[in-house]
Length: 374
Image (cartoon, rainbow, N blue to C red; front, top):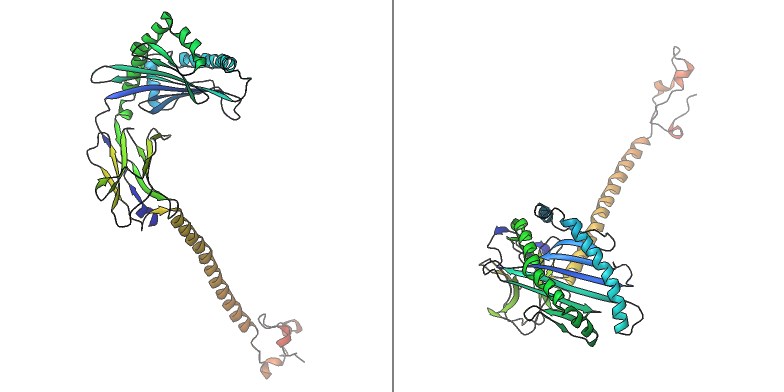
């Protein structure tokens, strides 16, 4: 009952108009000397949904959604060519680490090179856009400005790269990629995954709190598309101060999750958590009720209660069983040891009885209670 009261669950699948602006994005990470982490990892996303994955351990591009395999109808060589590209990029990343170590005057060690690139397409206007950004050890290194078709160096060590990549043939390669190649693949993925990518899934909303003095968290998960807003209201007005909203994150099943933390609540005010999803006209509203707020303290108390019941019920059953067995044994022993009075005529042997028959006594009568026959 506590879990049902604490969770406001909505899980409906309805059709809605697909988002106007679509994206195909790749996130690539190369690392050196990081234990239990692949040297190379790349994941592709369409509208924020992971569609393909490749790493240096598997050395193979694999789909994250079944409908991605439909792309082979347009490009039969897709999986082989993608795998070859990513394996080649892994070798390039090793060379990049050597160059970076030299430019930053480093001698090996733990380092990362990350690249985020992709394109966007407006299905109403037909406008395309793109981006390509590099980071070294978590800090901006160099980015491509697609409006001016030039590279922006964020570190002095990136200047040599900027000059090399601004050669005409390199710039022309990126122009072709962002105006033709990337948008074409994006459109193919959108067509193949239309049913999946144009669906609407409403979230499961829950109100959580670690301790009575901790912030109250409104957590929404399992929704799609990604475009959603989660916020708190106080007495019907949106709250800005004292509210922290986390970044929207993907779930393993292609849906998303987000959370908003209410740091301080006025006991005399009425609070509501509000969720708005793109393409859905109605808001999802969950009132804040401390009586049903799911907190660690309530969970721990519930677990203690369940544990106590788990111990008490079997113990009570055991006690009842012992009492019943004891009663049965008592009655059995009482019946077994009732004194036996032998009538006189029963103690006299008939002349026709054999000695063997005369020695047979009732099995229910112990020997010590039997009067010897003389």
